[in-house]
Image (cartoon, rainbow, N blue to C red; front, side, top):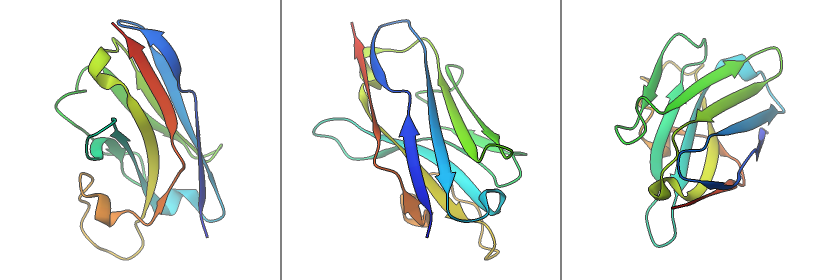
Length: 128
């Protein structure tokens, strides 16, 4: 079983930055693609960013391209989402997710159904 623990959320002003972290426990971290999703009040969960098991490829939602950056530290079993130039509309609970890469299926980072494990989320609130 995999456990994911997010941290780093908070209350910030528009234009500020936050560094979200997701710690991975339980299995071999570098056998999983990792993703970040978010859900704002009254809205459906949406894809934010993802990175492949080996860190060679990443993918972003159009709404965060150029402002957010995803990275992974295999030595620390951690995936990072650096969020810059935050906007009011970035306010949401941010979730980390893990997608097992060992079954040979194609990588579809936007599809939440691809992911096998989810964290509990960390709240990001951006005041305008």
